[in-house]
Length: 182
Image (cartoon, rainbow, N blue to C red; front, side, top):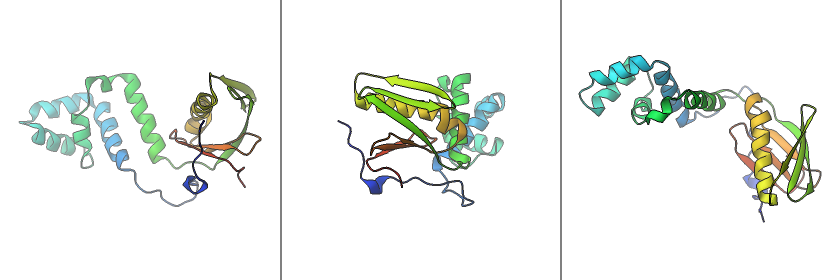
């Protein structure tokens, strides 16, 4: 059975204030990857001019005006990273990491059975049904992330009408709690 984390392990940052969030070290790397993939012709041209990997990193960093370390991330990419779908995914990940999140919002879910969850989002009822409660909760988190938290860049507290609730972050992380939010 799924055991929720202790209450003190439930950080729910309100990133809607004017405070600047701590820089995410992955953001510079991702920004470099997005920049390099957006100008693939220039990236390949710079790499072809290089004598070795260190020289390639220097040329790419300077030629594309990247943060330190971002060129290495570009040079380590596998070719599958060049697909449109992966580039769009990288842009989305970068947006979630660098854009301030809006204020938290609350949705109500119900669990008519341990293997079924229902939630209403924008006047449309959604149902998740799996073989066990843990998988149902995980699929509920994925649904809320995909339909609400990520596109709206807002943390979502999902109350269940019982003592358990879930906080879903736009980056897909979720935490469970056993006392209703107060």
